[in-house]
Image (tube, rainbow, N blue to C red; front, side):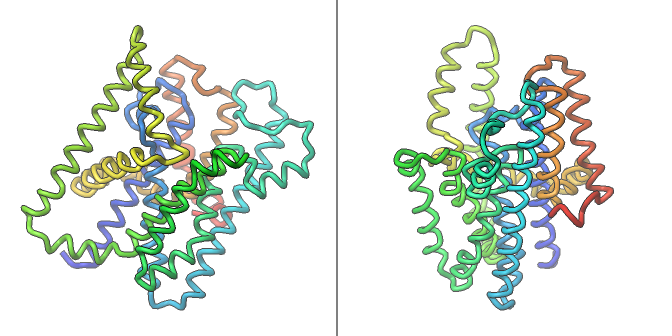
Length: 373
């Protein structure tokens, strides 16, 4: 197999994974359970979410496409591409927040209205200021502002990577990540805003991995089969055991009379905080992502044949899908509020309809020239 083919195969694996993460995010944000698709994302009840995978792969792809592949392009040109993209996403996130706020004011008594909307009594000027400063976060496209900020900051990371100073970049990333608990304690900013400090670690960690992806892949192929097994087996085994342990705990807590299990879940959840991106959450994500990548890479052809029709369009147009899902979900919840329908048929039809509508929009390239992909 040629090196070009290998590169294409690896990127296709990332597209499939990112497509899976997008489907999971949509289902978890919809929260129309039970719907027969609970097994896809496990209702977002695990100690690690699809969001980490989305950000990590986005960083990896950025490191490959805008990092290594543009290594011979002048830094200024590459940096401008990143900054322009970041500013665009930042503007879109602010505009969406303001639109959702204005529309939300018309449905203040609707039980399906997303929580967190600013009151109508607040001046619109303060709301705009809050949106611009990211102190006001509202709607289902909230992670868009993180992506935008990270892209705006990425030229600095790219500069260090081009100079092969990834240890310095990693040290800076860890430093900002470690500031989260102190910023939470000594500032009045919301934990959602402070996620900029914690979640940059997973994004720029992915970017660093993507920048050196080909180099690392070549080193991996030179290892003997026995060495690969000795490295992979303990990682995959630990990933499988922890995944099934988490799934078992979630399944038990869903049963009546399991207060002890629910107490254990609440206790453990403190060590897997999403906003802080706690050390154990990062470790668990690393294990599960490795398992996911192994499965999607090893069985790529079968996955493409069975699910490529939805995973590839969603994975290759992930930003478009994410933005569109935010718009559709906002209105869908005004019709059926999250976690209010116990009818599995209605939930299934609704969930499939939302995903199908987004897929149709991708296929028809609806507003492709306006919404970034």
